[in-house]
Picture 1 (tube, each protein chain N blue to C red):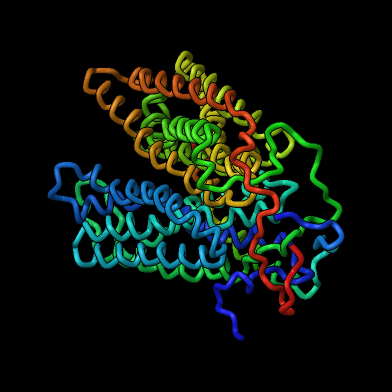
Picture 2 (cartoon, helix red, strand yellow):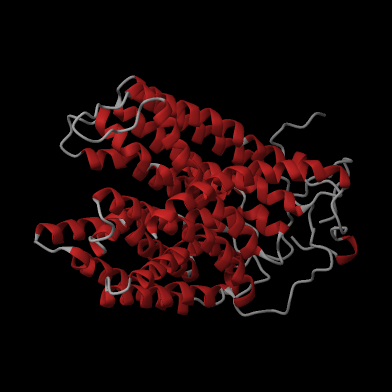
Length: 474
Length: 49
């Protein structure tokens, strides 16, 4: 009988398949959905065309992105078990469908001058694609790379950071091509709204093609597969050989301690990322000889932070395979705390050290995302690690709201109160230090999961047939 | 979830040579756009210094 394309039997790797074909499949999803971090390129064109009558254009233009981040966490939590049950090919195809549809609906919304459709399309529909796509390769990568889960998930999640590196200049070029950029100066004209619609359309079509590689290439290892010559190492306290279901994981204190760790680590990174360019201009207002040079330097600062974000995901997460997950989070949170304290106390005394400190903070931000799937695997096993990861990502949704509130609202109030320069950020950064201390303590409190939550070891597991139709040995 | 070591599907060393073109295509598929992004990023970083 012919098997359906999404049947898990179709994606059991045949003999001779290399596990190094899996990271490109994962990257085909993450490099695409990472486009979300490049949303800000659309803000000014949308404000200049569709939001001209609004009193809060900045707030409204951020809405599609914010809704997208909320839907990322919600959909990852809601559909995590479906992703585990139906497999990565189904998940990647569904992610592609929703993500691309979100861009196309946004295109229609812009063309029809219906902003609510842009929010609903990009934010709600596209956000579902973000969440399912984000967790789609995690369990599969950990199964293929039991010897180095940090490296494997680090490669994929680096892709999410890398997605913005691609989408940001690409979107800018498309907006320029379609006459949709915001001009400056006394003779500037409003950009063409149709040009924005065309940009969304082209991006949607391009990503639809790009993501085909993901669900075409992905394979799962045969049951019981392990890398040649590899044996599980000696037992370590925080690396379980048992499994915990997603339903039980959320009942453990370990899950909620890690939730706080992720939430506050992300908040700390967003503390700088969300407002990177203004922070640079406030700390170094005399930079360069002209406003244009200062703006270019600030854009360069944003760029170097993006690079740090991406590199941190692969480098620190890979290091966690050697040093252990809890130790790495001690670095992310503890050293992160010290770096914020350094910035708070020395402010703009030394530009090079300021930049290095910000780069490290952003590298820890990215690393926190990339290392957490491996940490979950260590605590809860591989059984439903993708679903558990999905539920944990609600921490990101909360941080996505909390971070900007802490930094933007407090900074704006300080500015309204007359503060200038680095002083604008003193209370916000002090709050972030407090959050990092709390997260550090939570990480220290993480212990092995109580055996009462472990799945029975002789639990029968559905065994897919291999290519010849014979049942594989479980 | 347990496996018997005698029946464990341990990976044989090396990829099937017929898959090599696919591997090259797959990695180029993702590395070329990623390289474009890094290149554009490095252009901007230049303005910082």
